Length: 104
Image (cartoon, rainbow, N blue to C red; front, side, top):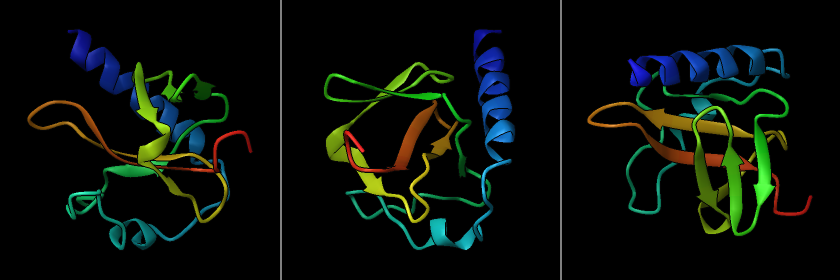
């Protein structure tokens, strides 16, 4: 049940983020993880809602997911907004995270 609620919260955050300026989805397809794996498997990436991401010690907290992404894992965002690529199988994982540089 909790996993379903988390998915619904993330879906709501992504939907709210859709009000941000739209970019073609395929820019995500060009990005990879540090290990060279693709960030996106189709519909895994989206902008995050305004206010969902908070800078904390050492990284960014995605409040809707309860996940902190270390600064070292942040890739530059082409539009200066926060975006996340989340894979749900076999478990929830933020594959790629895009945003402005820390403190910006």
